[in-house]
Length: 70
Image (cartoon, rainbow, N blue to C red; front, top):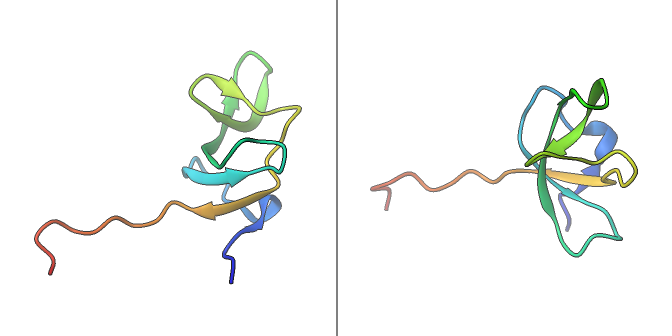
């Protein structure tokens, strides 16, 4: 069973997510933020804006194990 959800259900509050689009080589991490060059909010990460190649699905970043938990 897949936990991937349509991108229109993803949080748009600056939360980092894992995103997917069929044309991409693999999943990438993105967040919804202001792209000041474009003058509007969009999916971005690492100085790159995903305007023309919007993601289509997303999953939350998994929680990591706590140190010392057995």
